Image 1 (cartoon, rainbow, N blue to C red):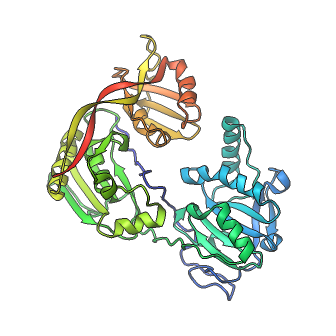
Image 2 (image 1 turned 60 degrees about the horizontal axis):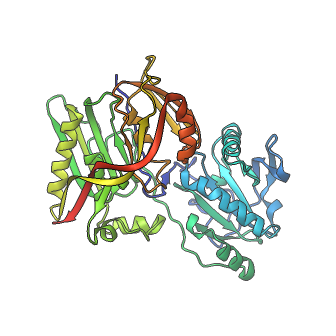
Image 3 (image 1 turned 90 degrees about the horizontal axis):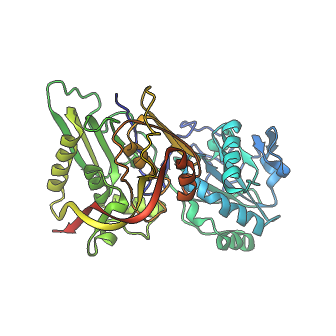
Length: 441
């Protein structure tokens, strides 16, 4: 039994979405076929499906955009699956309170009211805080006026109804809001998106390739526009099974080696000055993409025919080491502090009851069916990326498991409470683990 998982890269807070209408056509003379630009007047469109007006989350209503005239209006295009978007919610709530009456945040989601309302309810249940901002759901109107490819996406509309800025989340601050309210204008870096023209379910370089008469095909290239940034792996829930495709799009050198050696960022050591050279911490969003485009981003793809996963990854390791001869890369055992999954009893409460392998995890919980615990550990890397410790499994459990948790998956305390029913627990301790070491040759 095999389970294909597509892992999205969360090292850079950029998430690709498709505009709902790529052939944008707006009936306002102030807009062009790329949407409304900075300095242009926004037409008084009717916005459907606004909930949370006057603090009520009842049936969504319609409201004209002109209802917000006289205030600074910041449209926040977001989604419930977008971690950076969710991280902005408390910040926007605080700024809304600080500038109450002078400005208004308006979150805009393409998802249905039912999806967003369920998300808000879970957020309230886990944090004890409700979202007071009015929210647009099932949007098809505003995205036509302001098409975009990545989330979150912010459009600043002045009290005069003119677009003042289009930014990423880094620009959303009390300082910038106050400056715009005082001066009526603001010079901010414009967020620009590449169009996403790549189907992530298909090979990047070898679309339509047939490996029946071959062993493998691979390719390494520089940055490619319009394909986004991310990772695709065919991952088996059975250890040692075949891997058919590994694709990395517009990744850094360390990110490519992490795929090949199956290690996370917390299990990687960049020695000397390589950390700043290969993964600078001071670059975010558009600045990071521009940095990648300057000869620092790479695409790699490997297609193999029924090769065991160990062989496929070993092949990728050899090719990357040959492709990047300036670096010496390998695994070394080191003692480090880690979050270690352990069993609290010898009683088996994990044994699968069978069924098709499946895995689901979001910020509020997870469900694994007929999977190895290694799949659980892999999936936890995303919600626990804010924790500095590597996450490893020392349960010694080798069978297929069923696991279902309801918890804030970003909180080890909450995860441990949910794991108690399975006699599992994460503990902080020093462990000897294989670390990925990257040195200058």
